[in-house]
Length: 177
View (cartoon, one colour):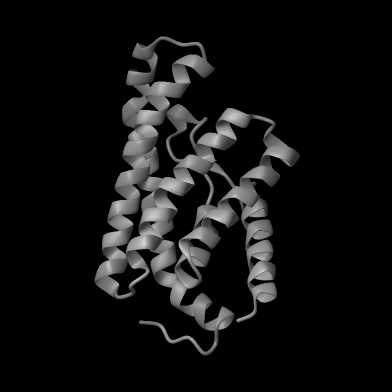
């Protein structure tokens, strides 16, 4: 596949991921500022089909676009990028050798990395950003951990179901392993 075609695909998937970021809803109504959006699925798809780096590029582009056109919240969008990175990169890196067992292992590692990493990042960032005591963050921590575990599990299940089909469309000569 030509580099131009890959660049075009990354551009299209980044734009789609940006649009999908607007489809958001809280998983836990008690903490409605934690909103699920399925945009990281597109980055994971590209990571599985092409490479982890291309998936990270999709994450970066969709987050930059969202920052410019909607949020204006650099801390929130940076945390969104870190969460996506912590999930997509290890998942795709482990899967890069293909196979269902490696794929499942990749999901488990990615979910764990993103959930644990975001718990730690929230402990470090939220008291400074929201100007709240650390005790407030610790009170929210079970919600944050649960949210990220659910979010990235949903992303994993959806990717597990669709990535083989999408790979066949984007690279018709490539067989699914």
